Length: 102
Image 1 (cartoon, rainbow, N blue to C red):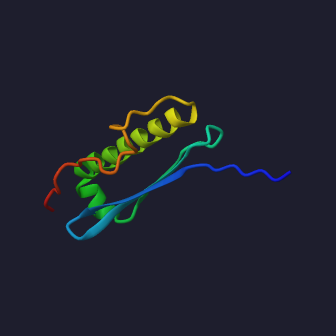
Image 2: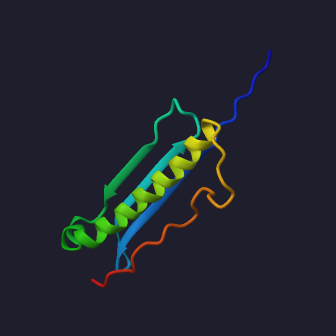
């Protein structure tokens, strides 16, 4: 007998920039399958700019992690059958602080 299982997987990707230069690359994969853990990756792509702007860059990284957690919470609620209110869709955008000048 044929069987099909459909799982929802959401990928999030972000780049933190100082000026026009990418400093950190962030990604996450979040699955509706409770047996698959959320994966998260953070890669510093420009150490000089990261070290010189780490406080501001870390604020952006924290904003990404918060968005990842919000998305994960929605998928977990859906997976365990909790009703997710219509006004709580998978977050499309998380406000992040304004760009910090170099």
